[in-house]
Image 1 (cartoon, one colour):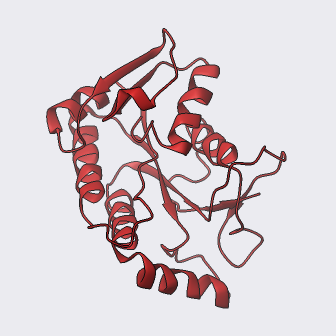
Image 2 (tube, rainbow, N blue to C red; image 1 turned 90 degrees about the vertical axis):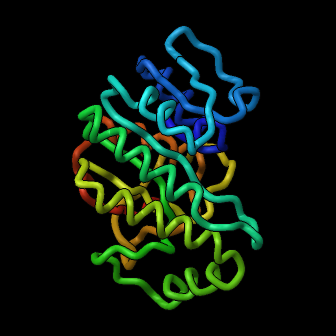
Length: 207
């Protein structure tokens, strides 16, 4: 698990443990990961520490990444993209095939049929937070060209609300693309460990 101390990543860890999985999480700031469990192993390292990333990946059945850039207009692009390259390389070295990662609807999928607002969103993000957009695009490119069994879940404005019991996954132009509960984003990522419908796809998800 990468990105375990973020708002979505923390929920992913909790849900994985509740489902009985053994979780190995690489974190930079262990104090931010308040979960404690006998089935949770924490590796403290920076995202540019390739040996630590290889240690985190080795022997895993799958990798989930909730890495995402900060909403910062002065953010420089690059570190998370490079980290994802290192993760993918470690997965190939350790013969770990399943990769589930996060992106946003700012990254298009060929199956999208976007409306006007859908087309304007990445333009606005590119103007307001260009570094974040470049990171999302970079992470997405690394994942989708990884030659792994990947799924890239694209989200829009996740918020801290209780689940309403609905989750839609598909492509823009249907009934997906709206904001959704972070807990449901986490649940979707966890569900992909046992669901192969979106292997090799970048579904947009929403409530």
